[in-house]
Length: 194
Image 1 (cartoon, one colour):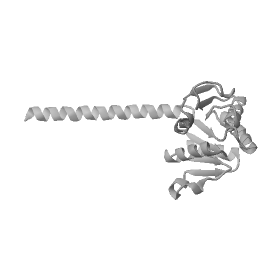
Image 2: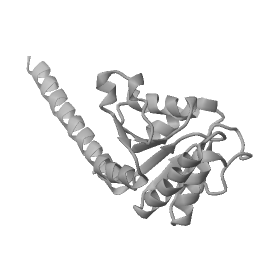
Image 3: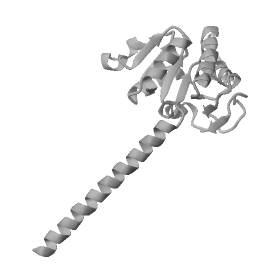
Image 4: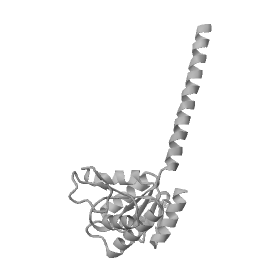
């Protein structure tokens, strides 16, 4: 009996150490997470972007960089992607582009870190899951898929002057925040990041 008891006691002690080690590891990760710069994803239309969405994206990029945050977008050289990256670069920011392509042909000149996925629109998952905060400018099906993926992942989405909340149920609508100006979007992002 004493062998069983000793063995059981040792396992309890070992499991207690493992649990403590996991907790320390988790605490270390959370501390590092709070030390890294936030990643703000700006999503929106590419080729068919409305002029207002492009202007909002440019302003958002500038404001994101001024906050010291990292801008993440789809990485292409058109529409909301190019405009937000240009705004961030002109304000001295760091930009990351998650490209759907296998090569750099369509990358924006304002992207510091292009990530080639060769995933097509599947890269939208990476955009959403990598971003700490998502700001969506008016777009089309690709933008809507990013909004839906973010909601499904339990993330809040700041909608820049367009409303798609009627596409979601009441619980999901609580994750959507409608704003009218880039400055308002940044204030909401600050609150979400704190």
